[in-house]
Every structure is written in structure tokens, then in C-alpha cells.
Length: 590
Image (cartoon, rainbow, N blue to C red):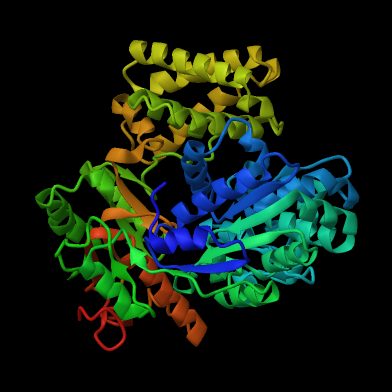
């Protein structure tokens, strides 16, 4: 693996290190290089290395890159995972019998599950709230547990939820034999704090813990890592960027990174300053927002692209996209699949997505799917259709993961054998069946109905589904059809390719919130809703809240490689362009 001098120096540091990495600096290369190196050190020992990342997408990226640098059998010596997965598999799952309510096991509660929806409804009904919307469910999904066991979260701060509601919700979760992500962390913290034998086990097992996106760590995560560090057998590589800390609503605080680094006496004198992603004009805009010492510089293949970022104001973001952004992509030979539209929140992306879809633009993101993704058969059907559209062997892993989670969601049972040789054989049976049905049915609806029946038969034969569960997929297809009718989709002309694009979105325009764009990159980016009151949000009054909004805008700016468009709403007479666009306090386009 070819590394720059900065990257090589960081990867070879054998001390505890907090590495500051600017956007596009190749930090994943450093992590993969470090991971392969320390795996080699522990290969003939019972020890292992943990690599903790912020998202599952980052997990899959690091796994894919690492495969080129390890030997057969090395997978026993590393775990690439999110912090929730790390705590779940190494702390909570093995020792949950020590916690009241979980002696007989548990199921993980996810925000897109039917259980979550029912528990939120039941909790709210008890407190006299019956008419719920998307935001109500979102507020429950963002609940966290503080170090002292109290409920915390933005909804509690605003008064949208009360501590009593949070306690009642978690009581119902526990009584149902479920555990949510917040309590996976909290219970893991308690187990490490109160049971020295568990802490000793974790410390003895992991020689190194590498943490990506460390600027977005929370107080309880820092306390978990502190306990492991104090046991004295684990070293740490912490990679992050304080200017990209954007998850304050989830409890992230960039100052916590410094707190932990000081606790473990980590070095903090190494930085990655070369940006391999953005052009010089885009880097110049980013440096206006947050100057660095030493400065961030454009060093990648797009460094000599001279296109200046552009600002457009209109009463309709849709018109700017159709009349300006899409023609700009065509004029610069940028494929639509390598472009994205970003916004401070999801809410304005939903109507934009619907209008773009009606206009005939292939999109992935809010408003793209004409059905709810939590329909139990939808994710598996999408992955299989995506594979048929583009035969990529690397997609098999995604199909396996989708099959695993589909079975878990449909039945509540865990089938880890999905990831075995026998499981791979089942996946190939499903793909063969899917291809045969594709040759018989041109339309997506007929294919979905047939696939639901035939996939169920295969999974019953494999022992993944019980005979009594044979209609689960067909019921989900009926729900998907109802969703699509409600969204005025022409079912007769819906193509199989329309399903596959959500799994293999290479030819679709991406729509994403600025938060969800973190860690991604595109040749062209349009950022909409850049009005004062939208970013920073009108509720942001403290200096910390406003600076987090500025960091969020910075993340959006640094997603673009070549072309960057800022969009403001001219119909918003009360709020003009955001301060982050202005000369005195931002990028200086107005």
C-alpha cells in the first residue's frame, strides 16, 4: 500500500496517538495500514485488534480494503465494527445474563422495526399522545442514557419528551426482551465498571483499539474506553477532525476527544494535511471556514480543476437543479451517479425527491423509494435486483448481510450460518431463482410476487424460515404495493431495474442530509436550504450550537471533488443567505 510520508509516520507510531486528519486526507489508508500491521503482530497469539468506526458503511469499506493485506485465518484476530457492535458482541451479549431482565436472552431493537413503532405508540398513548408523526418517532430513536443512568437527548432538552416518558419507553423495551442501542452502551459500561473480571477479559483480548471519527465520541463511549485503557493492556490509535464533529444531537462533543487523549497520555503532534479529494478552489472555501496550521492543501488528482464554487438563489431548489445543476453535470461530463444534493435536514429532500422522480430523474435518498424500506422483503429484494443489474462479486457480502437481517427482522431469530459456506450456497440458490424469474417477468410487481413465494420455499428448505412463516414475504410485498399505490406509482410499468437501483445506485443522483453525507465524496455537490434560520437553525442560539452548524456546512463543502453549487431560497423574505455564505463570516460568495 502506497502511503505519503504523513500517513506512513502515523501508521508506524507504536504509542497511543490521537491523529488529526483533514477531509480527504486518506485516513482510511492509515487505519488499514495500521490494522494490517498490528494483526501481523498478534497473529500467533490469542489477542486481537478492534477497529471501531462510526457507520456500517465505513465498516464494510475498511473490511474490503483490508482483505488485500492479510493472510487466511487473520479474521480471528480483528474485529471491524461500530461502537454499538463492539459492545454488543464482546460485552453485552456474553454477559447479559448478569443484567436484570436479560437472563433469558434478548433481541436488538432498531428504529426501523415494527417493534419500535409499536413501543413508541404504546408509550405515547399512556401519556395521552395519539397522533404521531415522523419527528415523534425520530425523537425516541435519539434518546440516550447518561453515565448516571438518566435519560438524555435533544427531545428532552426541548421538552418534547419527558424523563417519565423515556423511563416508561425503556421499561416496555426491557419487558419485551428487547434492548436498544442506547442501553447496549449503558449496560456495557456498567458491566465493565462493576465486574473486574469482564474488564480484565476485554483488556487482555485487545492489544490495540483503533477508533475512526473520534471527534464524534460521546461521554459514555469515552468512559467505556477509559476503563479499558486503565486496565493497562491496550494501546489506542484515535483518528478524527474537530472541525467535522457534527453529531451533537447524539451526544458527541469534540472536547471529549482531548479529554480521553490526555487520560491515556496520547501523542497529538501528528496530522494529515493533504486533501486528495477536493480541487484547490473548494479547499480554499473550506479554509475560509476553518483555517488550519499547517494549512490543508489540495494534493489529489482534482487539485488543478479551476471551477469556482457557484451560488444560485431561486424560489425553487427544484428549478435550480433542473435548469442549472443537471446541465452543469452534462457540460462537464460528470455522470449523474457521481453527484449529490445535500441539505441540512431530510425534510426538504422528501418533496424534492418526489418531484425529481416524477420528472424522470433516477434518485437514491429521501423520496426515492415509493415504499417504506422497513417492509421486511424490501431490502433483500433490492440487493438481489441490484446484483442482477450489475454482476459484482463484492455484492455477495451485501446480499448475505441483507438475508441475515431480513430473517432476523421477520422471525426474531439469529442465523449466523448465513455467513457460512452453506449460507453462501443458499444465496446462490436465491440468485439463480431470481434470474430465472427475471427472464419470465418483465415487470417488477410480478417479479416481487413470484420471488416472495419462491424465496420462502428455499429458506424453509434451508431451515431459515418455519413452514408457518411462508407467507411473511408475500405479506410484505402486498404492503409495498399498497405503499406504491398511495404514492401514485404506475405499478404496471415499474421495472426490476427500479428496485435494483437502491442497492447499486451508481447511475442515480444521490440525495442526502449533510449528516449522512459524512465520510462520502462526489464529483459534484449541490447544497440547498442555505438560508439563515435553516443553517444555522433558528433554534441554535448558543455559540456551541452555531459552531456545530458551521462544522456541518464545512462537511458539506468538503464532500465535493470538482464542482460545488450553493442554493438559497429567494422566497424566504425573512431569512436571507446563511452567514456561512457571506464574506465576513463564511465562504464569501455573497
